[in-house]
Length: 278
Image (cartoon, rainbow, N blue to C red; front, side):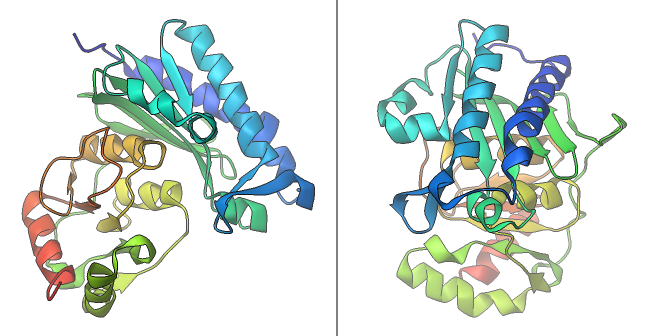
């Protein structure tokens, strides 16, 4: 049976995320030495001491509150990929991205975030994203809506942007990781929409999307720490998302793409526009 996570639980998770950000992420921002940054799989895939410290902090906090849960962070999985094997079957699991947008963070660009998703038996049941610079959080629990909490603690419900024709949409297509034929089609067709931009940070792109400040996002890589939280918050804010082939997104998917839009009809129209000629 799927575990139930409440909005009160997600408030607790957000408090842990904010605390980790204040203890480990913000003190290092624009204060990193070269020795505090290292490459993982390549020059565009880096980790900092702040990522590792924040992940350790959040892992310990979440295990303290939910002792029987599986807790995995991006850096822990990088060290031991087999941790992912339990995600689809765990009764309760937490997936941590301690700093999404590490390249921005290391470069001193204030576009990065902390993300946590909650999964039960392969279903995403909770998600939260925290911007530690502005101290803003968005969160959702399955079936309970999506919410924004500002630095003062005030809250309001989130709603995606109203559906508009595909050529009137704005958003981001992360085309860099698309396979070559699809990349050529998307980059050729992207000027047909009203506007596009790239924050190099899925956390901030999701913050825009779930608050109705843009219409679409497109990603090729769908690693769980990057997208599970944002996917649920977007769904709870009323949006529609699917893989490029139209199939539902699953926690075990690491490829196959992911396209977001305000509703199913606008998803199809955008899909047809961006992938024309692929």
